[in-house]
Structures are given as C-alpha cells and as structure tokens.
Length: 223
Image 1 (tube, helix red, strand yellow):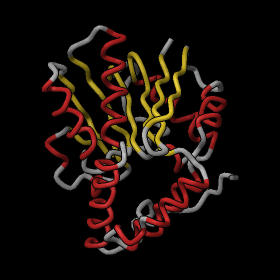
Image 2 (cartoon, rainbow, N blue to C red):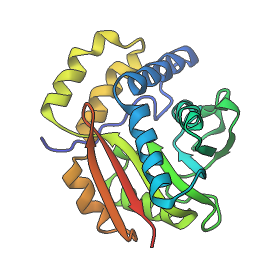
Image 3 (cartoon, rainbow, N blue to C red):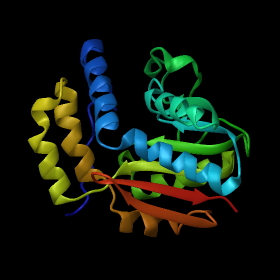
C-alpha cells in the first residue's frame, strides 16, 4: 500500500472549537484503548533502563494539551521513575490546560532550545504528518536538543489497519476524526520505511519495534 500524503483537518484548525475539542477527546481515547499510552511508556521505561536513570527530562513535540505524557508520567511515578515534561506545539492555542506542564510554541523542525536541553525528545502520532525529509530533519533536531535519545510513537501503514479504521468510524465523536483517522493511516510509514529514513539521520543507533494494534515504537540514540 503506497503512502499518500493527505492534509488532516485537525492540523489546519479546520473546525469549530467544539469540533476540535471533540477530536482531541477522540485522540485521547484512541491512545488509551489502542496502545498509544503503552507505547510511549514502554519507550521511556526502556530509555531509563538503558541509562540507569530514575529521573528524566523530556520534551514532548506536537503535544497538544499533554494528555499522553501526563498519563505516562503518572504511570512511571508509581514505579519510582520521575519524568519532568515540557510541551511543544506549533501554537499556544493548542495547550488548553496543558496538564500543568511548561509549554512552548515552536517549530518541530527548528526546535527553539539549546543543544542537549533535555534527556529525551518524544512524539506521539506526529511523524506521519511529515514528509520523508521533514522527518529526517525533525529527528536530527531532536538529537541536537536531547542528551540521550529521540522517541517516536506512531502508526504503521497497512491495508488491514486502514480497514479497521474505517470499521471504527462510528466510534468517533468528531467529523474531524472521521476524516483524519483514515488519512493518518494512508500517510503513515511502515517499520521498514522508518528504518531506512533514520539511516539518513545523525543517530548513532536506531531501534524500531512493532507494537500492539499497528503501532511502532522507535528509539534513535544520540552519539
């Protein structure tokens, strides 16, 4: 199945405030039910184990209101791992509430931070929005501002996945989600795509693993 780039309505703020809020609620449920929270938690936990760390700082890119890192932060805290999160999204209006985290508006491919500002740079359901060279640029920027690794939690493109998304359309509350969900799958990368693209980055080592229900978890380790 060929990758097809399709503009997503939530990305372009093409909806009323109520529609956008309903779409964000849909995304929260998708992440809760279909492996989004579990994938990010697993990536952070893996990094902490590899680094022998019990406290980590993390920049969450394209974060919205920070719902995913907040769930992960609370989950890891119960296991004795402290996660200090900073949010980044392209507009301040995307931080309703912000879950109490520090929030910064900025460009994911030109991160407004000094080198080695965070232990980790993370994203969830973001990189499929990027063209291949933009993805490479984002990862290199993440490697610049992190001390240890860039973590990617994203979808895996495939016909079965697309069919399941269409079957689930009645579950979504927002018309934005009903458009964006299949568009996301069509423009997602496969694990093989991701591995090849990340060979073009400055990463010293890359781990790409398939996860529950057509997710992938990626760790790009810094030199």
